[in-house]
Length: 83
Image (tube, rainbow, N blue to C red; front, side):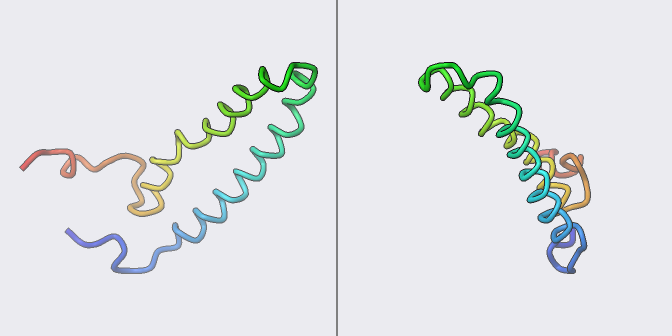
């Protein structure tokens, strides 16, 4: 099996740029759409909402990083088999 990092690939720089753009769009969307909905709430009530919105973007990141490294969206079958 060859090392995915042995040869340069276009996926890593493109993936990093896409991730930065996507997080920027997500941040702007949260900052512009959420305050009108919960802006009148107490700060302690707003905190869990912003904590959840600050963490939720991490969930699809594993598969995205896997694609950047290998070109696949899921773990290859041979990597999941036990020796």
